[in-house]
Length: 261
Image (cartoon, rainbow, N blue to C red; front, top):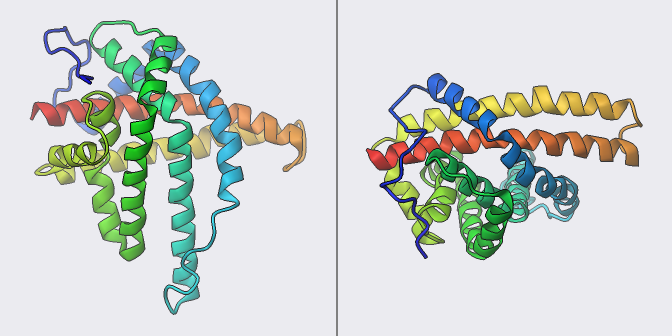
């Protein structure tokens, strides 16, 4: 299965070794141009994610209760494990949306228009191997962060481009992780700083922008925990997930830049 974009096609959005802020601004501009297509894909899928992931998270047991002699360390390891498992569940449920958005953006970068419905169909077809690769990625992170924090961070940076390795280059499972690592090797610090930067930007946007607005509006329709509050909050948070397109564009451009190097 060949997922690669033809090299002969003209690119409208080329990586040019730009700094973080220049890349962020261009990613935001490109995001606004493709906002309708991204929203059509992301909104319905992440409505499901926002409802189901918190439900599944309730059933995640405390794995590290007796792992060390410190209750504080055990609690931190339990919390970290629950966060990573929740992310894995979200990645599985939202896999179709991630694949579809990557395909739409990749096509737009090459001057083409891929209909969201077609992108969703491709996402459904590619979902099984996407799930396998996601499981390998998050299991490696759980092991890395459980043993020591630093190995977990290193693995996270090495394997950060696994989605693009699979969706755009057709490399599944272990091959996608190794391909991502091969791109990062030799440029680890630059990749780490860019990933850290976009993570901070998206955290601030989600937690001090979208989530505050969602909580404010939901608080005016009901008390926290009530059904109206939960529904309205989920709707706004789901709409806010459209902005994940900025992260995808940013990382995809960095991914192509590393391939070029």
